[in-house]
Image 1 (cartoon, rainbow, N blue to C red):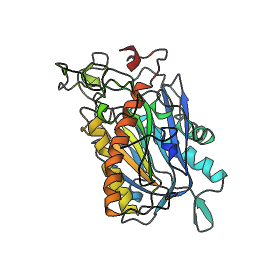
Image 2: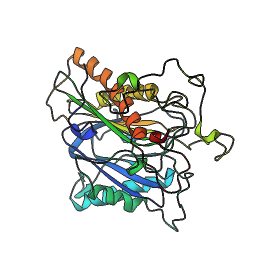
Image 3: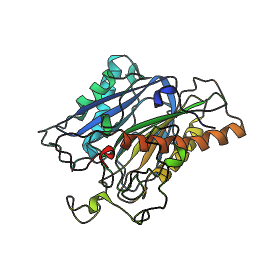
Image 4: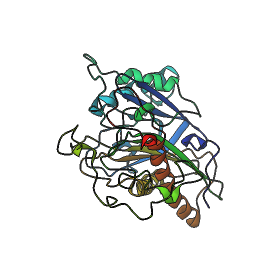
Length: 339
């Protein structure tokens, strides 16, 4: 039996805080996950059009074991600048790996495409994401808003606004799992054009409406509903024009290779919450963090429980991001609550 943590946010995992920064006119923003102490990290990319920074470093065979922060950003490739702003803020705090007398913050990052959401992208010579990244660090706390916030500010799904979602799960073993997702897929998080979420079987309480699955299933449930087939965007999906980027975290003690497995398992949540997902036009990616704060090392049985729960937790976070989205001036898609 899964139960949500007290905040139902990724910050129920001890040792993490989250900061958001956004520009309403730009219709874009940045979300940062800060680690109180360096956390073991991994990554898994399954989308066909990723935009990333420092992900190769996280492979189990490479040297660096831990990271200081993770960045999720809008802005397509321009948004990778956000990590520089986060690095600057951490360097001011003397946080980083010591290399030859210098402190180098390790800040992997991933971006989503939100350029064509009717926001004002005429930012001049340099995009604003470095400053947004810096501001997100200053805003970091254990309580933070979801929905139209941070990296989810300008996110879209098929026919609805996307958003930033988060959820947590407490296991009987004493381990906590948390998920954070900036939800911007080419596919749909609802069953056809209904109000029902694909993630419904994993819902805890009424965290995204408690509607369950529709009965009977609507005729369009199996139809591939792609946002860029909407007449306002044109006839075809745009390569790299989508993407759900996420973080899965736990307070269990994990090796770097086990963190990689955690990120792989979290992609199951994408599959259960989004139809379709992992397409050539999506850059779907999950970062994994293990703070080790619980002090619990996994037995074989406990590992199965953990990797089962991460997919369910991620699916819930994805649904909550869309459920919590709020309308803003100039939106081209409605929010879920208006459906």
